[in-house]
Length: 116
Image (cartoon, rainbow, N blue to C red; front, side, top):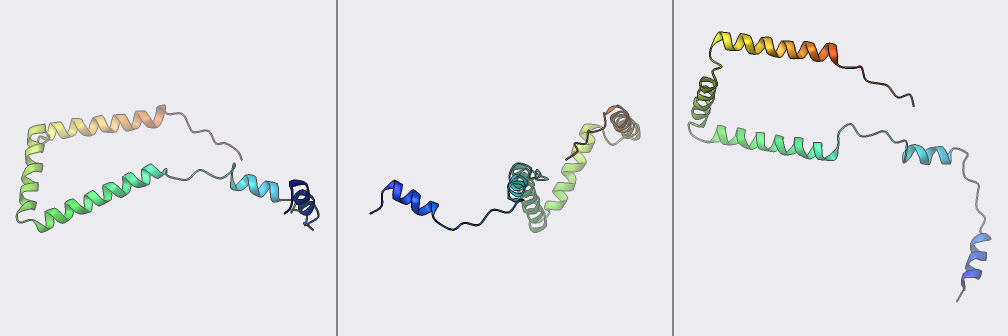
């Protein structure tokens, strides 16, 4: 059985080749300087869950008798209750959305680009 000193000597006597000169840079690139993913994992789960719910609701609407008629009636009732069935309301809503969009275009600061 070997003690620690004998094991250290055996490891030190192994013929090792020199690491490549770019090893340090490659390790940093793969760990610290790795680009951030485009979407976070919770966003992927959220999108997948919403897609699954949408597919399930679509299947429920298609497979249930007269479900599409009930859904259309529900949407019509919501539009009528919200007052979105008049032309003036839709014009003011469009004007407000347009104003908000144009204000956000002209008042937001440009993003800074970080040079790698």
